[in-house]
Image (cartoon, rainbow, N blue to C red; front, side, top):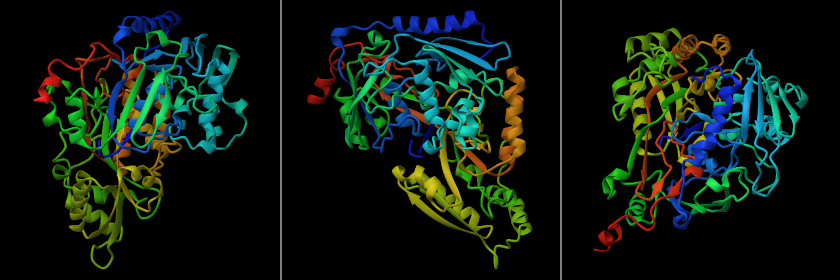
Length: 528
């Protein structure tokens, strides 16, 4: 789902089970009562960032969190399990051959301005996402839909060839190229939210009231279909990178949740500190579409020279594979350890002797200290095999754009999976994927993903995907370094409805105040 900077079995369903899922969503909501009299504005502190509040083009995790309040799709994440639940969808059924999804919408679903959300609204939203001029990064996740890829890539301009049919006002039919049992998980992603072409109109539980360099204010959407079960009247997101000040505000009861930049050693109530291992991987990658780094031997030569222990020394959860070990996913070899002789041999065979003919590489990282340390490790390691390394540093705000615009050969990503499936990572390297920033293309890899999509048995499907992952790693396009951990500080004495999960996504509609006033004795403590 989310790109984050360095600095921070869905089984076959019959109609009966579908109805149960959607009923459960409503049931779960009703099981979260709140006291209206004590509800107030929730205060969150988040990092300073140039927020892109267009759900179709945004890629950052901090924006994804805001979108859980502003927008909604046909399905949304369960705040605890992250399993897809019906949101604007009321029910759905899947054909026997699994190539047709028929989705019925809630007839009371409206936008914040009162406009009804209909099947045509849904189709229009998705057509907008697929529009080539939009250049939407997550649009290729919809390539499983008939005609979507051709339209997205400009091969076809005929919208009628896309497998989306409006049956009636509240029923949309999706025709697929191949069975896609995780489609409801994809549709939880903010890129597939239902949008209105009018400005400042929202489909989620909240509306955007203010946004400037200091804060974002969301207010309750009274036209939201489930407004009666949304507790908070408003949410204020203060934007600050001042760890000391942020920690003070939390300790004195002036902030309820800090998502970033906090001094955990000074948090008064340590039970508020929440650590979560994310469904994520921190890795470096080559731009593999231009010489000389379109040569896998050269890429692998540089990766063989990396001191594996040193590059991962400051990482708590070390990684040698791209995909986090999901239950049932086969263990693969991953990337090899340091092998200087192999590195030098590959370079020499490619015509680089490290003396008269030196390989040159430019790397681009963020300008924080951990990234700078990583860059220095790479520079020193590659110097030993006669490679010259230039380093470009970019601020956190500049970095994502730099991946597409900077003339560099190697970059660093932390990628948080969008749903609990290997494809959340492997899609990034499919040749025609809108998420493929590496330029690496491999027909065998694409074929393995296509073959996996046709396999109903989860274990066998995972085997095929694991084969694709090892092929990717053997190509030397990426080098996994670690898994990441998120740190949130939440006043659980005051706030309910917040659950830790592997995507670090916490739907805002479920949050509520459970106690009036500050934590016991907190004000007295800081008045002393």
